[in-house]
Structure formats: structure tokens, C-alpha cells
Length: 241
Picture 1: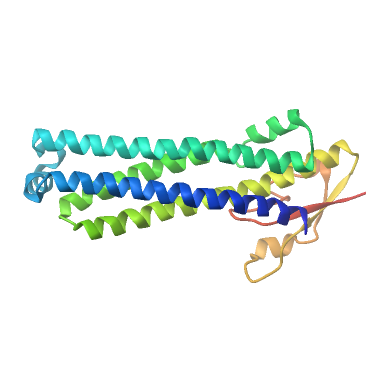
Picture 2: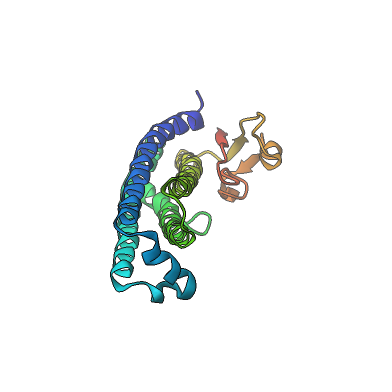
């Protein structure tokens, strides 16, 4: 088993935990939404919203809808907190399994190798989906969607949220794998690395072209000539004397 395959096997264990996390998130959001719908008849909120927006809400209904939106924000914030811990623990394991250097580990975790890092990406992902889910629930109430339709729409958004997080995990695992190998190679006096790509039906043209490319360590740049080259990239590197 190659180093990158070993690193991604570790990521697969994290993915199982993420699925559990998002399954609970979906259940909690649906429960809160159905509870809201069960406490107010459609005519109490549907027509005023469609006519004049949230300002037209009956005061009690508006307050409770605000609470629903707030509760959704708190649920997603809670998921984000767990994600950040899970990601940091996983990426730490990937790095230290290759190169046992705590100082360089901290640099790797903080490095904004693509203009940002995993923390910023996860926070932005959570912010974006909080907005999308709240917007969809509010729009569904305006349209007068059934509970079944709202459940379906919320499920699609939460599944998409999970998929995006999965993409971040795969990509950041490849990044941390490469960064640890580069740091270790530099520390041990290697001068070059070779790019090794998994060649199968999923391999993109860029990765196929980069396969077997030899890169001097002094010019190695993750995202440019060292994988990951794109989201979900599975590339690896090996040392050359």
C-alpha cells in the first residue's frame, strides 16, 4: 500500500464519522422545521410573507420563525465545531505518521496553500449552507410546501453540505500527505521528488500529464507541480536522490 493510499484509508474512517454527524444534523433540522409547521396553520404565515415579506408576518409567527432560523444556525455551528476538531486530529495523524516534527506540523496546519486552509474552507462551507438551508425553509413556507416536500429539499441540501465537506477532507488529506513528505525529504537531504498519480477512469488529464514528473525540492509547490492539483486529487510523491 502506498503512503497516499494509507493516508486516505485514515480519511475514510473520518468520513464514516462525518456521515453520522450529518445524519443527526439532518434529523435535527427536519425535527425543528416540522415542529414549527405543526404549531402554525399555513394561512397564518403564507399570505403575509408572499405579499410583503417578513415584515408582514404576524408578530408571534415572525418571532418563532426567527427562532427556527436561529436554531438551525446553532445546529450547523455545532457541526462545524466537531468538524474542525475531526479534521485537525486527522491531518495531524497523517503528517506525524510520515514526519514526526511538531513544529513543522503546526506550519503545515496553518499554511494557506491554496489561498486558504481547511479551517477557513469549513467555516465558509458552513456559512454558505446555513444561508441556503434557511432560505429554502423560508421559501418552502412561502410556497406552502408540504412537510414531505420540505423534508426532501432539506435532505438534498444537507447531503450536498456533506459532499462538499467530504471533498475538503479528501483534498486536505492529499495536501497534508504531500507537505509531510516534502518536509521530511528536505530534512533528510533529498533533492528531488517524482509525482505518482493513480491512473484509472477517474484520472483527469492534468494528473495524467503530471504522472512521473520529476520536481526539484527547491521548486516544489503544492497545487502547482505537487499534488493536490485540484479538489479530490489523489496524487502522491516519492523521493529521488
